[in-house]
Length: 362
Ligand code: DAH
Image 1 (spheres, rainbow, N blue to C red):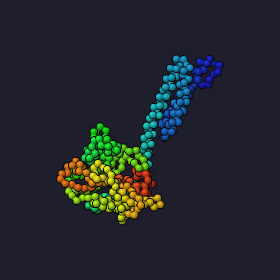
Image 2: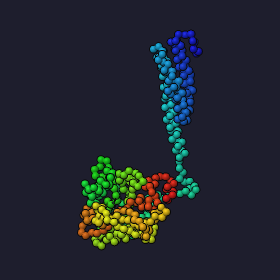
Image 3: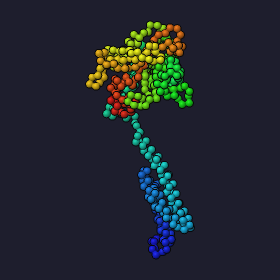
Image 4: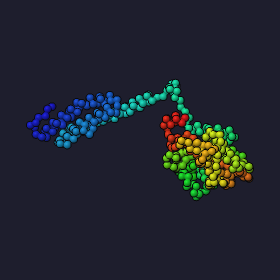
C-alpha cells in the first residue's frame, strides 16, 4: 500500500508501520526457508543481521511502534513479536544443527587411518628424555645396579624427615614444595632421594641401585628451571668397605659413558646436604671449542654435574638399618645432563612439542 502524503501525521505513521509489518510477514517464509537451509554460522549471521540485528528490519519496525496509539501498538506489536519469535527459534534450531554438521565434518576430515603405509619414510622417534633414561639404565644395569622406582606423590616423612631434614630445617624452604590440597603432609616429591629410604626399608643391605624419575618444585618456568624435571638417584650401601673412592670411580664411569669419552676427570668439592656426611658437589673437566662444550680429561674448566656424599647415620637410622652400615649416594638432574650433551641452552626445548626439535634431537 502506498503512503498518502496529505493524511494527518498519526495516520501516516499507522500506514507506515502497517506497511512495514506486512512487508515483514511477506518475507518471513523466505527468511525461515533460508535459515533452514543455511550451512554455515556466517550465513545464519547474515540473516540475523538483516532481520533482528541492531539495525534489522524487525528491530526498526519495533522502534516505530512507540509513535502509535495503544491499540495499534498492541496489534502490530503482537504481529511483529510472532515474526521475531519464529525467526529466533528457527535460528537457534539451525545453529544446533550446524554445530553438529561442523563437528561431524571435522571428525571425518581428521580421521587418521593408522593402517596406511608411512609416507616419505617419516617415522616417529623416541623423545630425548626416553632415550637418555634408557641409556643411563643400560649403563647401570651393566654395572650390577638394580633400577628401582618410587612414587611421585610422597609423604613429607620420605621426602624430608627420613632424609635428616626436620620440620623447620631451612632446606625445606629452599625446595619450594608443591603440597597436595586437603591432604596433610602429602606432596609431590622434590627429589628422588626419597627412593633411598624406601629401598633400605624394603630390601635391607647390601644395596646397589639407581632410580630415575620425575620430581617437582614450585619454580617459574624459564630457560634453566621447570616445575617438573627428572633426577637420577644412586645408592650403594653395605655393612662396611664402601668408600668415597668407590663413589668417585662410579661417577667417573658414568660421566664417561654418558658423554661418550674414554676418560674423564672428576672433582669432589665439599658441600652440604643434610642426608650426607660428608656431602659434596661433583664437577668434571671440560673445554670449550668453537662455543661448544667438550668433556675431556684435559679440560681447563670445571663443570658442575650434581650432588653426592656418604650416607648420613641419621638416614640409616630412619630407614630402620641396624648395626654397621656404610655407603654413598648421588643425585643428578637429568635435563641438565641432556642440555650439556645435546648443546641445548633452554630447558623449555626439551618439553616443547615442536616436531622440528623432536626430529632434530631424535
Ligand atoms: N637430592 C639432592 C637435590 O635434589 C641431590 C643429591 C645430593 C642427592 C647429594 C644425593 C646426594 O643422593 O648424596 O638437590
